[in-house]
Amino acid sequence: MKKEVVIAGLIILILIFTVGCDYKAYDLQDQPTSDTSLVDEIAQIEEDLAQEVEDVPVVEEEVVIPELTEEPQMEGDVQVVRVKENEFVRLKPTVTDPDNDPVTWSFTKPLDAKGDWKTQYSDAGEYMVTLTATDGKLTTSKKIKLVVERVNVPPTISGVKDITVREGEVVRFEPQVSDPNKDPITVTISEPLKGGSFVTDHTSAGQYTVTVKANDGELNAEQSFKLTVLDVNVKPEIKNVQDVTVVEGELVQIKPEVTDLDEDQVDVSISEPLGSDGKWQTSFTDHGEYFVTVTADDGKDKVTKRVKVTVQDVNKAPEIVDVSLAVN
Image (cartoon, rainbow, N blue to C red):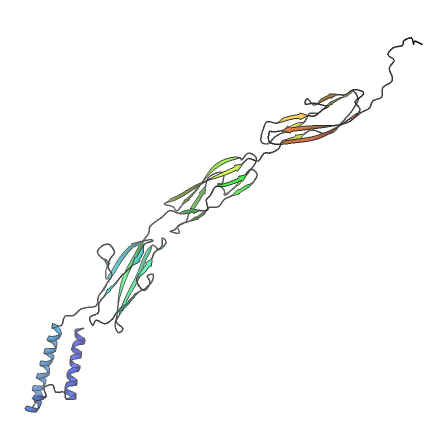
């Protein structure tokens, strides 16, 4: 800046002597001028100008990035600004101009031009930011090292809610898991959904507490929900029953086999003419067709099976029981 002022002064001197300004004109008119006196006069003017320049206070341009919490940290000529992930960064420069010229300034990315940046949890790292200030003619720049320090947060689990199904249905479950730091996540699900699905059967009725865990290597997230499997009754099954054909005088006997998958207690009944014991001793007058019903009742559902019993006629010879005197 001093050099610029001196150069400007010399330019002014040249103009004075070339244009014939009134400066020192009275000396030129009143007395002759020698080359030696002219040189001495120029030297005196330069000395006076130099003295004036030294007396003028010089204000250098400066760019100040105020530290948010403490004294500015420096790495050589580079100022260091430290923030945490997910914080809002706002850098406000203080810019001065010795000529009081209007000054504009801007920052480079990841900041916006005004020096603002909303960091995210995945933005940890070091960023070299340049601040540029200009008065329209001259430009000043400053490097700032922006350090975004990692802040680990646990993963998030969503899509978890209670589930209700009926026996015999297939349950499929896949939680929605994410990590704000974009760390790799390990997900575990407790039984009976450990593999992500559960094929229920007639023995699955009940309520289960299922726990979902997500781990990013440092922190855990956990959520639980209720899985309710409603009981669906399996009806009893009647086997070993088929139509029967006998002849008069033979024993009719039915032995049904009844099973129940739910292992419920089952009451079995057989209609007449057999009765609940499943037996019928036919006589010589019982020929004909009969329909017998076998019923199995587990207290929730009844199952029946119809059996046709055929009793074939057997002809027997007449039998003489007695002979008596007839009365006229």
